[in-house]
Image (cartoon, rainbow, N blue to C red):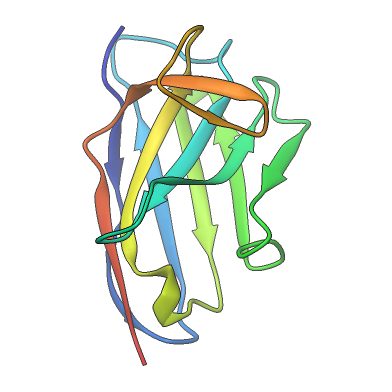
Length: 125
């Protein structure tokens, strides 16, 4: 498999918005559940949102539901995370991940085992 590549992170003030993108060239993840995870310093990695291959079903962590929206464009081999009303506690490294049987992390009942390098999101108060 080809490692997905995240982009779109940055520094914003509380209440602002960012849109993260995840793309994989030369490999299609259109048959995989895709997810966004995040990890803050000193904290465990947590699942933020997942989306089924066709995009019809999504899941969100309670902490982001109503503020974040996950979407995908399989024609572009891309997955997105629109983040609105950002809070300082959203500060973390954000990772895109693809479903993989026997993967190292689980979120919403799915194992993920193909990871991007991450993109940093910093929200200041």
